[in-house]
Length: 367
Image (tube, rainbow, N blue to C red):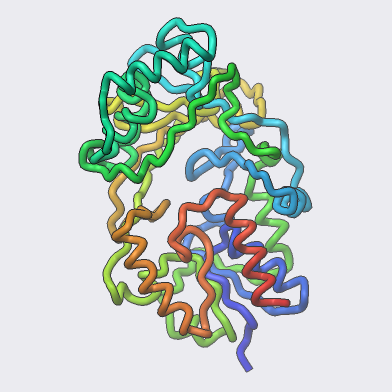
């Protein structure tokens, strides 16, 4: 008899939900995490009375009533609406691209005037078959929006010039001909009051958890401790890079406490010019309408991933997706392990998508 029914590698949303549901029906679970804390990338830490999103801004949004009701068992959400501001040099623009943005760019007032201006720029560019991301973006929104709000940000995000990036990365750029700065169109949106860590604490209540514990440091022991493994790390690493490395992007975060009440007036400000090395500054108190006397900000720098860095999101281009399919085939033949989450399923998931994927996995494995 094995000591546990399930070993869950990673205490982020996917692993924690699986552990919670398995525990609920009497399965014995051990959750391990190489970090010193639970909750994976949604971890929030209280600093100066402010819940700081340690691994970048996490704004919960979903159209799924099932997902919304599920997560609301563990927390209460506030009414935060994501309305980021884009800064290009000393100009500020509303995101997503909407009538406020177009008014600031061109002085247009009506949707008809804005649409006409964009069409004029698209026609002037004369791009019929876009050969790269730059041409694709210009063919969608014209040169002005592309140069001020897309180009620099995208090049920083991907670590490559827009002319070197494939056109399919940008299939569409949402353009809204209304005066509305709400970034997400989803029916449900907000930030958990008191931070995300509390959700995972509730999910993992009564379950064995070991932190500062890397599966790969003692792989043989952990492979034999449970009947099955739920693995939320990198699928290619699990199989010792048998077919080669999948590509990931990494991030670096610089967090500062500032002795002022309000640094930038918004939770998220994107820096869209290439010369500014970070993509955005997050001012965490604004997620929960804080009025603390100090503030905490985080600058976010995209980086190329190497094996000594944290992988934050997959690079889902054709080459990588083909390689992932080989690993997926291996996984399908492997009855011992279940892969989940962004890294395990090599997919750019939002939080609600992780929850939906975890609940689907739970249904398949536990019912």
